[in-house]
Amino acid sequence: MTKIYKYLLISLLFLPAAGCSFLNVEPFDDFTDEEFWTSEDQARSYMYGFYPTVFSGYGTSYASALSVIKPGTNDDVCEQDQQDLQPTVVPVTSGSWSFSNIRKANYVIHNVGRLPIDSTGINHWRGVGRFFRACYYSGLVFTFGDVPWFDTLCVVSDKKADMDYMYKDRDPRSYVDERIIEDFEYAMKYVRANDGNLQVNKYVVAGMASRYLLREGTYLKYVKGDETMAALCLQKAKEAAEMVMNSGRYSIAPSYTALFTSEDLAGNPEMLMYRHYVDGVLSHQMLSINFTESQEGCSKSLAEAFVCSDGQPVYVKNPMWLPRTYDEFFQNRDPRLSMSIRPKYYIKGMDCKPFAYTYTGYSWRKYMDDSRADKPEPTWTGAKNTTDAPCLRYAEVLLNYAEAAYELMLLGKGTFTQADLDKSINLIRARQDVNLPALKMSGDQPMVNNVAFDDPMRLSIESYTGETPVDPLLWEIRRERRCELCLEGFRVNDLKRWKRLDYVWNGCNPDIRYGAYIQLANYPDRDAEIVLEDPTATEGYILRNTAGQRQRPIARDYIAPIPSGQITLYESKGYHLSQNPEWE
Image (cartoon, rainbow, N blue to C red; front, side):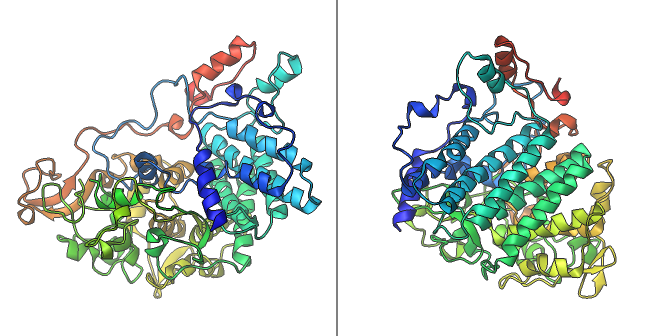
């Protein structure tokens, strides 16, 4: 417990400051004396400053908790007003264009050799530093594309060599990707297999590498069209996932709900990394959002994505499927549906106690133990929530493996067999409180219980994207990811890396505008804001998007602009910082 409390307390001291760039950070030697690197405990204490930025969990505020459920515009959460996905002009500043954490990581990498420990220990801490640098650069590359690669400390001076390095232009994305891979591989080789509870170990490194390299590999394939670099990233993502899978240290936990509602995740076999909260020390607001706060609500698109209990998609099982009550809708479905969305409709204006209303009827409950709702704890309200937050779990690693392996097969760089499904997705489906039929392969078609199928929603949506349609089996791999990881902050980046932001355009996917199908007579006290797609009808889908519809996503929606203030700053020093072509 001493280590846990130290983590919590120091995490509070090292909360990141938004918008800080490497150009306005004082040199480390201004606040670090020569005696700092004298023990591993001091090194460990310094490293704790990185944890809240990479393993943020639910954060500590309402906004940070809500950003997990809705990290950006996606097709899982219904919005009233569908604004465009990006600003129409280049912003002057951006909190994402920041190299302060890169600088801190470089400080670690270049100073751990001062520790009075053996080479094994020094390589461990250098590996931890390179791991965090790889994580930060993965975020920068995914957001901005080409970025300047800094692997030594910038020296603030007027010397030309120092100025040339500090104000260097952006390096090619492929070059930075290669450096990221090198950092991850070094960390996977040298970071300790076990360094204590809530500490980065080689399997945490590998799990995060599988996350970021899958994201980068698929982005390079679908958005940039760079299949060579895509294949390299995907191969490394697959290998990293396999390191975790072959370790024998992790397994799928029996309870899906307990992953998100536990006060202490220590000992949970699925946790590679989590954030621990303690009453009076560190707390969050995620549980409040799922309990007492009104909600935008889930979309029809997400709610219908969950398959039936026999493993078949709803429109495969019944092309005319139209459940008119919540009992019909939730009956005989993937159990994760009712574990993520309450199996009853909560309509504004109606008596929804003990829960809050939602504008779509679909009320998210993933982070709430509803069985205890009639006797809420004092820590369940406001900013007092103390349930632990999963940051990296084994199920995600298995999903990363399955997708990376399948994408490599499509690129002609590997094979994908039933064995790959059985050691990844089918382990997740076999979770004790889920227990879905195994996903099988019938040629290039998905199959359950010896019945091959092709979800009609696949071509219905894909036909509007203008891209090559997703393979039927890849569609199901992506579905499994969507349902297993729903409302955990992944969906918006998944849509970007697949070049499928069209899914959040109503011209392609009208289901993002709607909520539950209701009969008005069953909700006589509903609020006037609750309207149907046909306002003259007595039953139908709730129309949540009433205030506007966004334009179709374009190329610039997949890449952020370089802030104009940074470009101007470079120019004032006599240097050039290039803009992304999509934003020139």
